[in-house]
Amino acid sequence: MGDIAASFRRAPAGFTPRQWEEFQDRGILVIADVFGDQELAIWLAAILRVRQAAAVAADGFFTLRNFVEADPAFARLIDHPAYVGFVYDLYGEMLKLQLSELFVRATGDGARPEHWHIDGPRVLPYAVFAPDAPLQVKIGIWLTDVLHPDMGNLAFVPGSHRQPYFDAYDTHEVARGEEQLLVRRGSLTLMDTALWHRTVRNDSAVTRMNLYLGYSPSWLPTSDREISDPVWLAGLNREQRIIMRSYAKAFSHAKPPPEDFPLFLDRDSGADREPDRYRDHVRLFHRKRMTAWERFSAASRP
Image 1: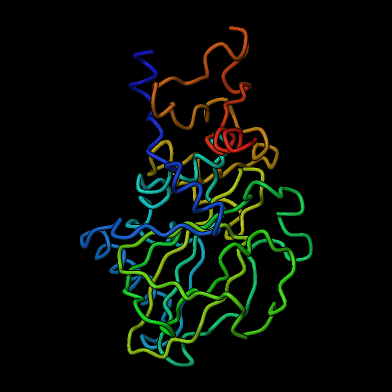
Image 2 (image 1 turned 90 degrees about the vertical axis):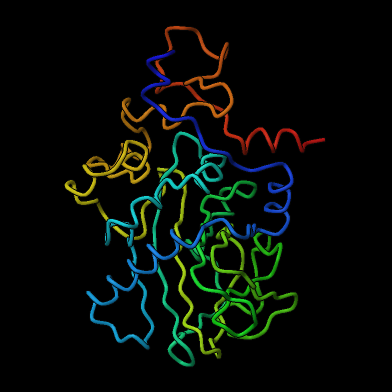
C-alpha cells in the first residue's frame, strides 16, 4: 500500500451533501471566492497572449476551444484541485475533459449573445439516455466581475435540466423563471449541460472573460480535438494526461488501458479499490468502483 500511496494521488474534495442537493435541484452550483488574485492574473495574461496570437481585435468577441493546449498556464486547469473532485464524484475512473473553451465577450454587439439552448446533442439530448445522471457538466471560472444584469451574463432557468422541451428554444426571449448569473471574479460554477441557458447582451463597460471546462465519461466523443499533441502531453502530470484521454485507438475510450487505473485513490482511505467487492484475482482495471454520485443517489431513495 505504501508504494501505491507514493505513486498516486488521493481524490480531492468533492460535493458536500448540501452542495449535491443544490446541484440536483437547480442544475447549477455557484461557489464564490474560489480562486485568488494570483491565479486569476496568470490566466488573464494567458488569454491575452492567445488572443494576440490569433490577431483578434482587443474590442471584439473572442473564443477558443481546446484552450488548455494553447498556453502553458492553462494545463493546471485540467485537474485543478478546486473542482476536479466534483467531476470525479460524477464520473469516477472514466473521467474525461470533453472540451475546454474560453470566452472574451466585449461590450455591445461584440458580446455575441446566444439564444436559448442546451449543450450536447440536440435532437436526442443526453437526458434521453441518462435521465438521472448528468452525462456532461461544465465548470465555469469567472475572471471578471459580473455583478449586474446585462453584462454578458449567463442566463438560465433553475431546474430546467429536467425539462426536455423549452418554449423559448432558439430565441433570445426572456423566459419565465429566468435568472441572470451574478458572480464575483474568482467564482466557480458547476452546471449540468442539460440546463436551458443563453447569454445576454453586454451593455456594460466591462469586457467579460471566463473559462469553461466540460467533463464527461471517457466514452463520450470530444468536442474540441481529435488527439492531443504528444509533446504537450509529455509535459503533463499523470492525472492530467489520463483526463485528456488522448487515445490512438477509439475503443480505449470505453476500455482505458490498465496503466490508467486508478485515476485517483479513495479520498478517505487512500485505497485503490473497494474492499471485499471482488475476489482477489480480479485485476484492478476490471473492478467497478462506486462513484459518489451513485452513493448520493442511493441515499436519497426512499
